[in-house]
Amino acid sequence: MREHGGVSREELRQSAAVTVAVLLALGLVAAWSVLIPGVDAWENIVAAVIGSLRLTGPVAAAFAAWVALRKRRASRGLQLTTWRALRAPLAIVVVVLGSFAATVLVLAIKTVLTEQSGRLSLSGLGMGMAGLALYSVIGWVAGWVLPYALTPPLAGLACYGLFTWLADGEGWADRLAPGTGEPYDLFQGLSGTIFLNQIIWLLGVTCALLLGWAALVTRQALVLAFALLAVLLAGTGVARVLAEPKPAAAQEIAYSCQEWPITVCVHPGMRAGLTELGAAFTEIASRLAETPAAFTRVEQRPLDDPLTPSSGLAPIHLPDLSAGFADEAAREYLDALAARCHGRPADGYREIVMAWLRGEPLPGGPLLEHEYAAAWFSGLNEHQRREWLRMFFSDFQTCKLSTTHFGGGPAGTSVQVATPVATEPDSESSPQVYPVYPDPSASPGWGPKMSPHGWH
Image (cartoon, rainbow, N blue to C red; front, side):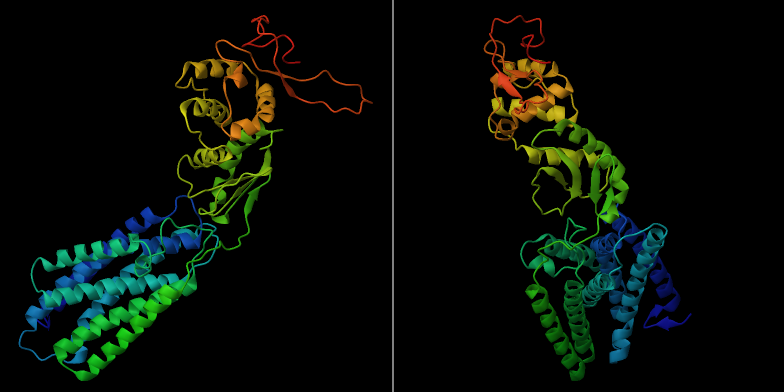
């Protein structure tokens, strides 16, 4: 059996095959966990395979360190040429990049079978490959410099800790780690310029480490000179990465819309959620009809855009299409419609109205007055509740609801919502809806603290 620097070729082939299989399986699992659920977009695939580097990168580093320490032990006393020194680490880089390409291929086959929006970012895939090459070279150098049995697992753990710290850091540090940033927003898109700058930085530092190590073991000045040029390349990449501003505005997209019974528009990669969103927001639209918050259109907005409901439009955030996404989007929209109130009494009244808008059972609230308010509100039909909300919408939004808005509580003046008698057709006056404060001694047999003239 032929030897390759003291290590059998058959052993190297088997190790490479096992590593590719492990990296492929681990890459698919990691990428699947990063995928935004329910999103059919090429950008989602690119972001997922880049995100898988957090797990596949440390494994590649550990494998490279294991080969490096065995190579060093087999090469003791031998004079290495530049090519013989670089051949083994370059072969490892090719192996791990092959596993990355296989991961991309498997996910691409899955996405080709379905209609995808957006486009495949080649620069994003290139950045992922450059990042994986850096992991491998770090592991190789560590295994060569520290040829101990514990070096491979320690190299993997160190790489995981270092790049996780960089990616989760604030400020400029997170731009140096290969990644897209989390949570990833489809509206932001993937910037090819940022990826190219990261490729320059990652390739520069990778070549600097590898050539610096080669200069150390071969003691050749020319290799050292190339290593210094690689350092300059890495510095240029860092400067370009840090000088590139993060995207501040979302890219323009062509919405995918469902037109009936209300118009619901989302990112084309999330069109699978249109039916469920339409069902959830149609109920809310029916309850808000004829109020200042009435809407006929629901529109998805970027995750970093504040939700500002306006007449006729309900903006929503939609991070993904995981279970319960429509209810979560509806809850967030309603919370933006009227912010939480400070103090238990005011917030308890707000929650009664919110529960109705969400289609939930009316809560009794923490106080006795809330129980009476919920009982009074439950005695109204849907049309009466809409008229009530139209009258007191500003109080609902500004946390000014009190017991007087819900029949006056266990004792006190009741609040009535009355509609006037229809006017003659030729009358110039228009119908109005206004609060009526009837005699507190009115008969209680007309519903929860309502007079016989309360509703027509």
